[in-house]
Amino acid sequence: MSLLMHTLHVELGERSYPVYIGRGLLADSQLLARHIAGSQVVIVSNDTVAPLYVEKVRALLGQRKLVTEVVLPDGEQYKTLATLSNIFDRVMAENHNRTTTFIAVGGGVVGDIAGFAAACYQRGVDFIQVPTTLLAQVDSSVGGKTAVNHPLGKNMIGAFYQPRAVLIDTNALQTLPARELSAGLAEVLKYGLICDEPFYRWLQEQMPRLLAREEAVLAEAIERSCSNKARVVAADEREGGLRAILNFGHTFGHAIETAQGYGQWLHGEAVATGMLLALELSARRGGVSLSEVDDFRELLLDMHLPVRAPVDMTAGVFLELMARDKKVVDGRLRLILLKAIGDARIIDDVSESELVDLLNELPAEA
Image (tube, rainbow, N blue to C red; front, side, top):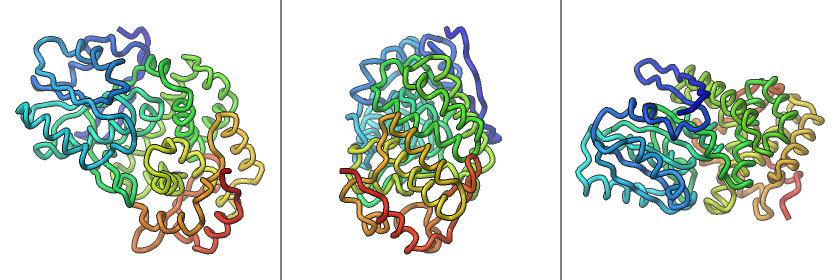
């Protein structure tokens, strides 16, 4: 059992749920079981994560649960309707009923697709998030966004569907590849940029320790990130207003992911470049200073994250894909820009010429 566990709550009335953060939570025999009402469980994972963690999760369930394992191929390119259908094939073949609980064990792709499957199966069954990547721990596992991708756009088919609980075992980060750690830290930076300036300054100072995986510093970063997200989600569950600020950098980033083919750039890598573009645009509109843009660029370089768009991403490609973004309302593209560090605003009056100038003037990746 974890000797030190922090519990946050996402306050959504009858849909409220806890987020547990701590070391060794996958050794706590009581924590998971308290959120499973029925006798059937579906564990959804992928072929990279399953060998590391699925047996640990099964052990927590004991002998009284009827467990079906669904192991997906690893990669964003498999976050599709076809994969979703394969999940349904398994659970229907094994006669899972409305009291079954889906448990997502893996990164953001697993969490998104397992959550969407739970939202759809028999019109909605319980699910629990057990995120094993930093990006999933601080972002996709909290807030109830579930989806699959479409060739014409990322996360265009999905549902808002909240989990019963989120279980974040920080031990999982010790096996995380360095590239995925940096990609996750990009999403951590987002919270400081959009709504928590002191957190952003702390992250700038602590980045070497975060990259070195110092346990206490990583745990604090995760807790502060989840706390910020929980506060925003509680205020705006279905993204009618405030919650849109969580998409800072994502409109540019999703365009990169779609154009390059899902999985070529990690989500956090694309978002890092997208946030840099959004910061540059914010500076051009009188928000953050140019020196703050430069500081952020240097920070991304220190984290080994990309700071330039792919060489084949012309302004025309960006604009075509951004026009399909979920944040387009009545033909107007909404972007999240910063008035200052920690002060994000939803902007819907950015002209096409502004975007063309921005995208044409910034160098592309070699």
